[in-house]
Every structure is written in C-alpha cells, then in structure tokens.
Image 1 (cartoon, rainbow, N blue to C red):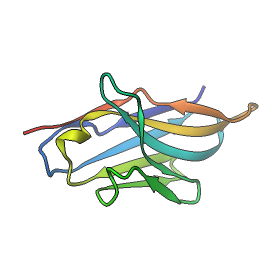
Image 2 (image 1 turned 120 degrees about the horizontal axis):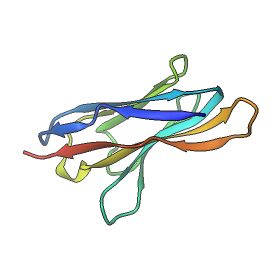
Image 3 (image 1 turned 135 degrees about the vertical axis):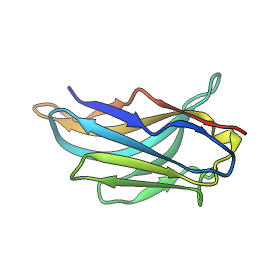
Length: 120
C-alpha cells in the first residue's frame, strides 16, 4: 500500500516562512507528478503547486514568487517552501502524487493533510 505523509505545518506570523515535507512510502515502482493542494472549510480543494519527475513546476497565481516546490526522487520526497506567508494562505495542505505501485497501474494518492495557520 502506498502512503503519503505530510509534515511541517503549524502556526506562523504573517510574513513568516514554513517548509512542508511529504514522504512517499510503500511498494513504489515510479513516482510521476507530485504536488500540493490546499483547502479551507466551505471551499473546494485548490492546486498550489505541482512538479514533474524531471523538476518542471507549476504554481497557482496566488503563490507565484512566494512558494517553491521541489522534490528528491531518491528519497521519494516532495517539499513546499512557503515564504512571505499571508493570512489567506491559512488552509489544510495536502500532498498528492501519481504513483505506480508494484504490480498495478498508476493511481492518484493523497496525504492526510497538514494544517497551516498564518496569524498574528
């Protein structure tokens, strides 16, 4: 069974920084696109950033220039460096990946989410 586990969320003041990490585990043959989404109560989950297996990135307009998505393929990790945080960045952040498990076709996997709160 493939799992994604996020870490690094917490409370930070406006203008501060946080780094989220996501570790993939299980019987994985290949990790394709990975990324981060976020959701606030009452709203749909929205894309924050994605990264391909070769490192090409895409960002939501609201986070461009402030957030950086990166990955370490050898460690099966994806990261989200968040700088200049704003109160509107407050959300539960979810890790996402397209994964090929052993003996199966590609599946989309989600982490359990980590809460980021930006407040003074």
